[in-house]
Structures are given as structure tokens and as C-alpha cells.
Amino acid sequence: MKSSILPPARETLSVLVITSLFLLLTGIFVGIRPEHFLMAGLFLLLFFSGSYTRKLAVALLPFIVFAISYDWMRVWPNYEVNPIDVQGLYEAEKSLFGITVGGQTLIPCEFFAQHHCSVADFMAGIFYLCWVPVPIAFGLWLYFKGQRSMYLRFSMVFLLVNLIGFVGYYIHPAAPPWYAMNYGFEPVLSTPGNVAGLGRFDELLGITVFEGIYGRNANVFAAVPSLHAAYMVVALAYAVMARCRRWLIALFAFIMVGIWWTAVYSGHHYIIDVSLGIGCALLGIFVFEQGLMRWSAFRCFFQRYSNYIG
Image (tube, rainbow, N blue to C red; front, top):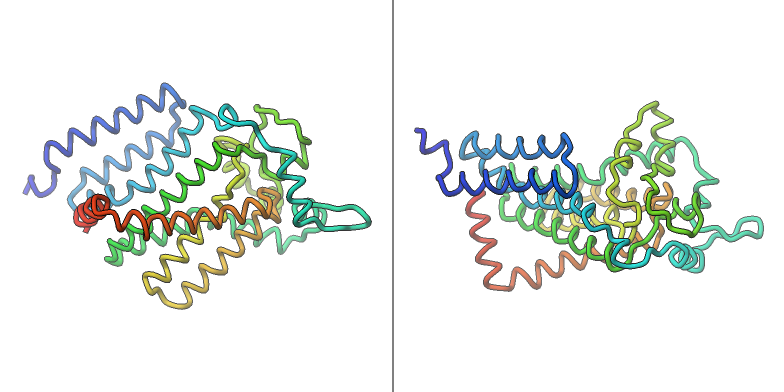
């Protein structure tokens, strides 16, 4: 009975060593926070509670690696690799998508900063709260429904799209629209995260949900590409591949477009950022499905991974 609950000694040792190294290195290079202990503790609890929860813990690894990768960008900020683009992106947005009001040309974010309403502010907050939770919930739904192979394809593409996006952050560090609107075109590295237009949602409901989220932003100069715009593209694509019900596909499409709109309406992203984020998602799906899944070595790894969590 005991052997059916506890993992093999080799797996036990590997997990304990990797988890300890994660906490140690995070404490040294990033700075340990309560959520690091929470994530490590939850993973260990799932891994050692039984064979069923162990499979879930291993299945969640793509999402865990995503969270760690984002957090660890604090170690080597992208603005130390390449110059920060503040004015160039702003001017390109104005040239491509500028809106003329009273003889003055505004970028769409500036237009929405001047023209907004409570209903739109409320919907913007709801859409942006769906950013990560809906894709992760969709992945878990696939997993618990028994579509383990489809879950794994989705979660690994989710991770791949993030990694592609992170590379984009380092290739072209860029300030979001709210930065140019509030601080001008000179990059100030100590600038804290900003809720921008989403602050109107907090004020409307008398809460500080977005203030808490953006107060933990690892780097404000990581606006290109917009991964906010990418996640629901991946979720929608795999909902179609999984042949989900039409109402769910329609809901995902609605949320996806809503997030695209909110990114611009709230001043967090230019239309250029959103477009590149969509392209990032499509590239990740293509590379995974038409590239990695046709590589025999990767397919062997994928099959073993799928069998383990199956």
C-alpha cells in the first residue's frame, strides 16, 4: 500500500533537490517572497499526496516553469541588454493608428484616456482578470476531462509562446503607452508598475485588485509583444482543436477580443503590441505543431510525458 502512494526514491530525491535549489537560488538572485514558498509547498503536497495528485503536479510543470521564468527576468533586466524604446513606438502608433480630435492627433490610448465610461471601465477590468485564469482553467478542464494529450499540447504551447514573448522583451525593450503619456520619452529605470486605465475599475468597485497585480510587475519596459493579447489566442485555438462546444469557443473568442480592446483602452499596450502578441501566439502554435511535434526526439519526450500524466 505504501509503495502505491510514495513515488520511487529516485523521483523523490530529484524533486526535493530541484525544489531546494529553486528556493535557494531564488532567495539569492531574486529575493524570496511568500508566494515562492506557497508554490513550492503546493507542488510538494501534490507530488507526495498520492499517485493521482502526483500526475497533476507533473502536469502543471509547464505553468510552473512559465511563472518561474517570468519572475527570474528580474535577475537580468531586458533594459540592460538593449536600449529602451519609448518615443519610437509611440510615434509609430500615432503614424499608423492616430486619431485626430480638434486638430490634434492622439494615439488610441490617449483618446480612450479622454473618452471613457463606467460600463467600459467595468468590462475592461473583467476582461483583463480573465487574462491568465481562463487559459489555466481551460487547461485544467482538459486535464480533468481526460484529454491529457490535448492538455499537454496546450500547456506546452502556452509555455513556448511565453518564452518567445520573453525573447521579444530582450530583443526590443519597450515602454507601454501609459509611460509615454505620464513620463514623456526619457526612460527612468526605477519607474514602478502602473495600473493606468485599469485603476478606474478599482475605483468603481472600491477595491485594489489591479493595484496589487501591477505593483508586482517584474519590469515595466516589457510591452512588446503583448502576451495579454496572446494567451486567449492559444486557448481558442486548442478549444477548436479539442472540438469543444460552440458556446465555449464563442465565449473564448469574445474574451479574446475583449482583452485586445482592453489592452489599448486601458493604456497598457499599443495596437502594435497587441498585433505582435497575436503573431507571437500564432508562431508558437505553428512551431510546436508543425515543428516540434514532427521531430522524433521531441515526440518521444512528449509521449513519455503524456503517458506519465495519463
